[in-house]
Length: 154
Image (cartoon, rainbow, N blue to C red; front, side, top):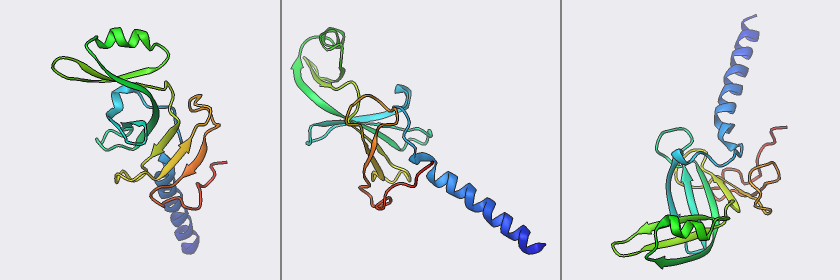
């Protein structure tokens, strides 16, 4: 009897900890703008937008969008955004003009930082850039945490 109770206790702890550890591996739609922490332009031609899904001020979800064009302009954000209605516009304000980055409306890559250590653990690719709808594919595990792929949730 004691052995079966210990075994059930062990199974409960195992499944609870597995759920907590793997809970953020599931790709969800891009989080709300309110959870956006920062954005940054990378030398590889992508704009990285980081989000905090659990409210601890650490990035755990990153959307990578391709930069279509960038330029300086004295125009306001609203004026520039109207000219690029099908895409997203990010900007940096300077004293006399702004630097605008026009990016694709949907990300090409989604990165997850499961343990929030600053290294991407899972990278998904959305070749069709049609948003998160199930056709995204595991692309890489830059941190090596999922070098053998991701356990299936099916």
